[in-house]
Image (cartoon, rainbow, N blue to C red; front, side, top):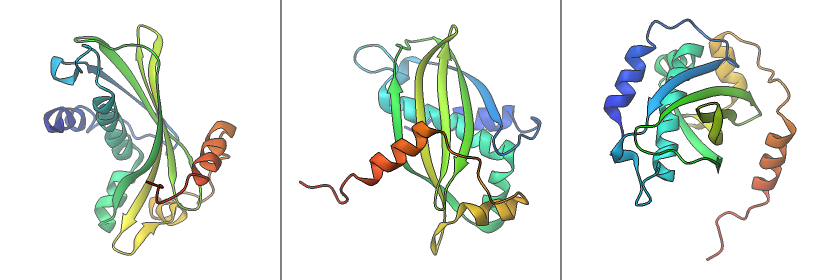
Length: 176
């Protein structure tokens, strides 16, 4: 089940947090609960993706993007991701999450998130997200205009550009 109570806690906790620039970093703290575990008694890989939501949603609020969604009736959807799992997170481990937007292109926003425990990175995710309307994908330049910010993105890091290029070569729909 989706962690709605934890999401409500995060929204409440950060409701008066200082605004962040679009490229600012939101830092949050979480606990791995027993219901987050897989049969090997570590944080489930699917739950990891869900917990990253708990960092992105307050990030959207603090950067003003959530208000843009509310004002326009747009939505936001994950359109792709690449995740690295490097250290185990077990029950009751406390983790620190860093969430930030690193730029955009003509269609998507790119976000980098990571989970840390005792100074070591446990997992990292690159998210490609799209703002959506009834007409389809909303160009990031239009989103930035609604936010009152310049439409130009900073240069995306080489590793992000390489991922975009590699993902563009994947066949769609997949062959079965």
